[in-house]
Length: 105
Image (cartoon, rainbow, N blue to C red):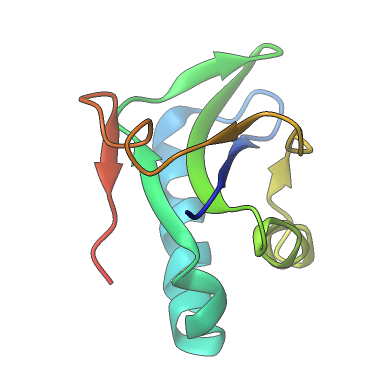
């Protein structure tokens, strides 16, 4: 069974949601073109934006084996991410509720 980690991405301080959405769209578009196997490890996206540490945030479920590769790609693109907790794993079924959108690959 595949284990997933929750990876939470953060907007820059004071960055509005609309601007953060644009940066995320650019990042994911770039990742799918340049590193499709890393992109394929992203299973689900939270259905709503959140607020983490006073910043707009969005969470993603990523396979545990590829979480570091996704985090490295985010850092290289200037997108801040909270470090995932390797002990807090989820199953595919836990990432399939109404609070998650499954990403078609």
